[in-house]
Image 1: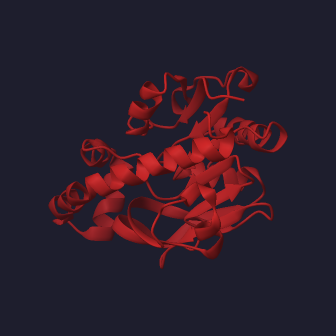
Image 2: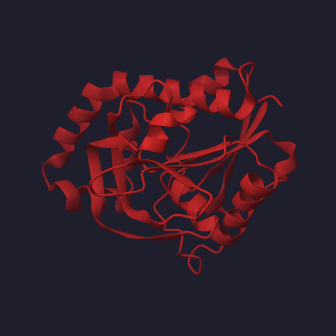
Image 3: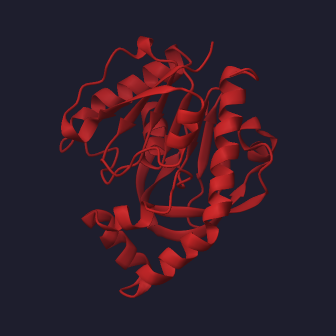
Length: 244
C-alpha cells in the first residue's frame, strides 16, 4: 500500500497541517480537507490511504455543542481499528483517538502553553515513530485538556511534567502527539487571533507573554522543522514501508 491520497479532519481553518503541507507537495500526495466545524461531511474513507486529525478549540466531550464530534470519533475508530488506516492525530486529534477508542479526556490541571520539554517514555524510545529523536525534546504546547485514561491497545510514547500522555501509538500505523509538531513561522500569530487560544495564552503566561512566546518559538523553528521532517518520514516508513 502506498500513500497517494490523504484526508485531513480540520476543526478550525487556521489549524491545518502547517509545515507538513510542504512535505505532502514534495511527495505528490493529494490531500483533501474536511472542515468539520463548518458543517462539511466526512467522505468515504475507503477512497483514502491515510487520515490526519488536527487541533481545534473545542473539547472531545462537547458533543451537544458540536454534534459532528460523534461522527468524527466513529470515523476515526473505523479508520484505525477496522481498516488499520495510517493515522496522525495532533492536539485535539490526539485526544480524539483516545476518546474514540474508549479512553477518557478531561481538563488538564493547568493549561500547557509555551515552548516546553517533552520526554520520550521507554516505549517511545523503542518506537520507530520517534527514531532519531532525543530522549527529551522542546515542543510547542497550547492545550488545556489532556488524555486522562489510555485505552488498553494504545502505547504512551511521550510524557511531560504537566501532562502524562503526550504521544500515543496504535500498532505501526497510528501515531498522535498532544504537542504541536506542524508549526510554521506564521502559526503563533494565526492562533493568537483565536479567542479561546488567546485566553489560554493569557491564563498561562500573563498579559506580556506574547513577545517572549513568539521569540522562543522563532528561536526553535529550525529545531521544530527538523522534528517535523523526522516525524513525517518515520510515520511513512512505519505505516507504509520503506518505499512510500
